[in-house]
Each structure stands twice: as structure tokens, then as C-alpha cells.
Length: 287
Length: 108
Length: 138
Image (cartoon, chains in turn brown, yellow, orange):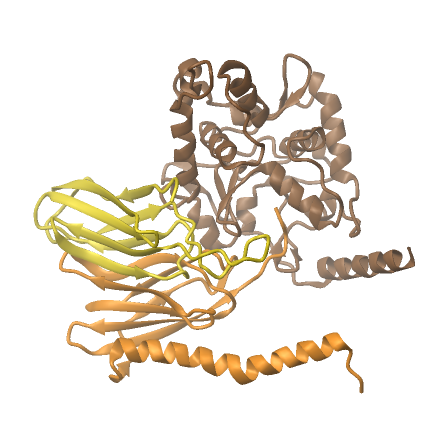
């Protein structure tokens, strides 16, 4: 016990040093994100009313990346996420399972049927449960297609969420936080401000109080999720939102929550609501 | 290798003798041979080791790639044409697989 | 002054790296250049590398090399465990002697490009790229 207490204290000191004393760098707020020379994105907007006193503006993580990374997102050909979008589009048309159905055989064209969906998820379903896009996909696979559910963090799931999210690109994030969503939103908010792990950090410690600063060599953003799923240069692969959450919590040296579990779905709703009004940017590119 | 998909972007037409940009991207992990798996065993190298682009059988570029090329290799260069015809793009995998795609172009 | 076992190990490793690592690496680059040029004299103008001054992630660093009139360009990452990056020859249907690609840089280092010109001469240039190593997971 003594050892653990000492270690915790030492780590806490190390962290406060890392956050407090390193050079600060402002995000490049003058940059404008235009995709394929035609689609101008809202990457900075007035923060939603519920963030009064916390943030003045909601700023997309795109602004916190360097110019070379930002540029990768401006052209769908140069954005490596589109290799994965293509896999998702192929899967959309592919018949799987015992019922002889594909996504397309029920929903038709992905461009029309899925337009706007990313912007309003997660949302409370007919049974009163908060569902993310992955829940809806697996519900279709199991109950309509007679196919096996995809793991939350598997490649086919990430590719499909990327293909579906793309159909809402440029539309404002607009998740509902009242009515049946409110208890989930409150749960997510509590998680956001709860300190986790040996390093005693909450989401807010980094992304609300220290965005724009560096934590070691990482330039902290507001932790907005309008770009998910993202193509992350570090892994050179698509990264799901819950995997990102998982990594953040783990890095506080806490036992993380389950990807797809109720905690991360509630957190997803709350964090999404902090970016209401930003354009859906998925599939984005981050470092 | 599963799920290898080439993408190519060229204009639909070009003026004779005028350079234009060709962009290519292929999905490939470019496994460097320097990494180890969870059990500490080295993961064998598997990369795209060569890329070629030809126009009507004439070379545009011929490139040897090493493991220092990033996953999902992106290769951009300039080409010029003196007639309508076809670009052929070929990627050579360490495992012997060859991925090819072709794009036609008109003279403007 | 006493050293702990761990400190000694670190110092030892550093010493070995200084004695053996650096010259071996330098000679790998020199040997590759010599193999490419056949030992010919190398000029310094007419070749350019475009790369970010600071790369946010060493896994994907966009670079562009161009050498007007070059028939072939070789690119090396001088600080990588294995320095060769690529080698490209430009055929009759090339519109320029320019190549853009994305490369892996293991650490802060110089990227080097050597070009063989159509008259058989060689030119080279280097460009320093700082690589930051982020720690956050996901």
C-alpha cells in the first residue's frame, strides 16, 4: 500500500508537470477545411448551451493536427480511410446469413437511406435503450439477415460505420439530450468529469481544461468525436470511437470500460452533444 | 494478401505533351519484418516491393519500395501522353501476388 | 559515485550504440550511395525534397522529391534501422522527374535523395525532419 500511494503521488506530480509546464501551442483556428474543393465543413462553432462556463467554442480535432495531417483529409483520394469506406460499401451490397439479405436489399441505396444517421447517433431506441450505430448494425445482422454479429472493434464493423457515417458528412451533429435520452446524457456527463486511474485524470482534465496544451508530445484537442470513425496515422488503420475512449481511460492507468458497454455508449452521447453544431467529419484523419 | 485494393486517379483526358498528375493508393499493411507479435515472435516481412506504371506499353515510372514506405502506399507522379490509350498500374507483393488495374484516357 | 544496476545497463547500452551503431549506420547509407553512383562525384543543385519540418507521426510522413531532368532518384532515411526508402526511375511517358509518397521515419533524422541525371551525373540533397512521438493510446 505504501508503495502504491508513493507511486501514485509521483505519477500525479509527473503529470501535472507535463501538463502545466510544457510549451503551449494554440490550434490553427484560421485553417478552413474544404473537402474535394467543394464541401466546406463547420469545424468551429459556438458551444452548445449546456457547456456555458466550460467552453465558448466547439472546435474540431482537425484544427489541433499539423498541416500535413490536416491536408490528408481535404481530398478523398488522399484520405486513406476511403480504402476502408470502399470495403464497407462492398459489404453493404453483400448477402450474408440465413435470410438471404444484404443491407441493400432492405435499405436500398446507402446514400439515401443512411443520410443523416451519423449526425443523430447515439439515440434511444424503441425499447428505451441507448444505441450506437454498431448496435443498429448488429441488430440488422442478427435479426434481419440471420448473420453473426460483428465484434464492436473489428475491421468489418469499422469499415461499415465509416461507409454509413460518410453519408452524413457535412451535416451538423445534432444528438438529442432531452426526453428519454436525458438520463443517459447525465450518466455520460458524470463519467466525463469523473477522475479515473492512478493518474487521477478525467476527460475534462485533458480535453476541457488543457486543450491546446501538450501532454508529452501529444497536442491535446477538445476530444470532439464528430470525425469518428477516424483513420489514425499511429495505427495506419480505422479506429472506432469506443477504442479511442478505451485507450484514453487505460492511459489514466485505470481498468477501462468495455467497448460497446453502457458506460461508453452514455459517454458517446455526452461527448457527441459537446460538439452539436460541428459538421460530421467522418471518416477523418488524425495522428 | 486479403483485401488488397488499388485506387488510381487520373484525368479523363489530357493535352498532348502536357504533364498531369497521377495519384495511386493501394490497401496493404506493408509489414516491415521488424515487428514482433504478442508472443515475441518476429512478424515476417510482407510488403509491396515494386510498383510500375506504363502508358500503352511505355514506362512512366518504375519504383522499388522498401519497408520504410508507409502502410497503404500512396504514390503520386506526373505523366504525359501523345495519343489516347491506356495506363496500366501494377503492384508486386512479396508473396508473389500481382495487383493490376488499368485506366483509359482521351486526348483533349 | 555509485550506479544502480539499471543505470549501468543504460550507460552500457548507450556506449555500445556510440561505438558500434552510428558508424555502421553511416556506412550503410554511404555504401548504398556508392552502389547507386558507382563512386562518381555528386553535385548539390537541381534536386529538392519537400517534407514537413516536424512530423506529427513518424508512421506517415508525406515527402516529395523532384530533380528536373533526372532519370532515377533514390531516397534514404538516414536514421532508420534500415535506411533505404525507395528508388524510382522515370520512363519516356513520365511528365516530370517528381515523386510524392508517404514514408516511415523511426526518429528525428535527415532524409536524403540522390538523383542520376540524363547526362550520367549525380546530385543529392538532404532534408531534416523532426519526428514527435506521441504517447496517447486508442
